[in-house]
Image 1: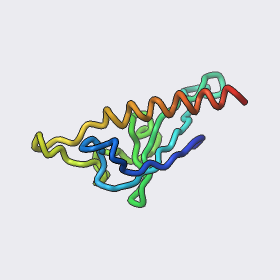
Image 2 (image 1 turned 45 degrees about the vertical axis):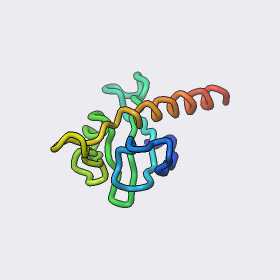
Image 3 (image 1 turned 30 degrees about the vertical axis):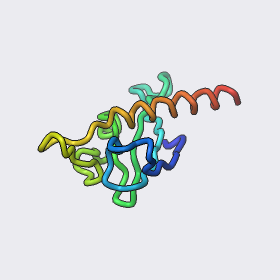
Length: 110
């Protein structure tokens, strides 16, 4: 169940750190069942990236629920400094964490 989404565009603040080959992605915050019986447990929050090429999991839990891995997406940029590796997603994940906290705080205000 998708509960939030937000679009991100390449910005100057990402100079050299933008980890994608595309200029824009949409971040999805997804609730997935936590286990059996699911109704007795809080859902797990996980993130996915959407682009016109598809929806790609940023975590293994979403891959287990049928989302395609970002590993094979074609939108995760190669790292020009280290051959055969991808750019770090860490700076983007830090931003994602900030968004999750902000979304959570807004939900608690309601």
